[in-house]
Length: 199
Ligand code: OGA
Ligand code: MN
Image 1 (cartoon, rainbow, N blue to C red):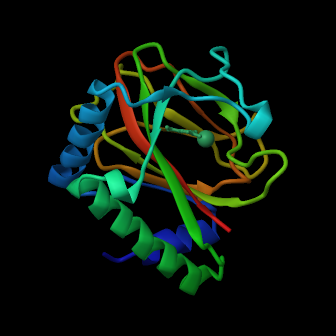
Image 2 (cartoon, rainbow, N blue to C red):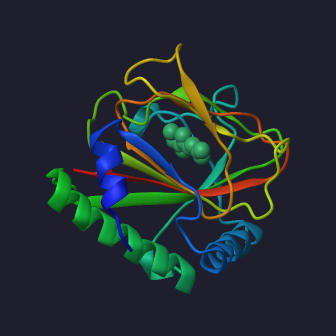
């Protein structure tokens, strides 16, 4: 896989959306593994904040998450984690980011789910450097909602923005501390893997 365009974009402007990053058959297998774990009741409501301040805030976000874990990962998830690991190494070489970890979770937004505008860096820690989101929704149509709205000027949440449809196999990368973003209300179940490269 050639990651050069991703590195160039992360250097400037700091974000990129790549439709078809993951081949459709592999992305479908990842989605199927996600659906099985959901069916087994393994997801938890996502919270806001961290540590003792972690709280369920239905006014802010309405997704359910399951953290990825190599030991419990199916074949497709393992392939995804291997791809992410390759990307981590290449980003360190090309951008000198010193990333030493990845943490990622499946996210499911039931119909009506959203996540209000936010940055991905927690207030008290600066450890999340790059956000990576992989969308898992086969046959997503305009009108299904659930677009990622990303404001394209670092630090800004009022000006220019782009809307990215959460289509099967699309990857989005951005500098976690720089870009305000939000998930618009989804009109049907929306699946993804969201993760962070950390220091
Ligand atoms: C997040 C997030 C965006 C998306 O989980 O922090 O912003 O498009 N997700 O799923
Ligand atoms: Mn986010």
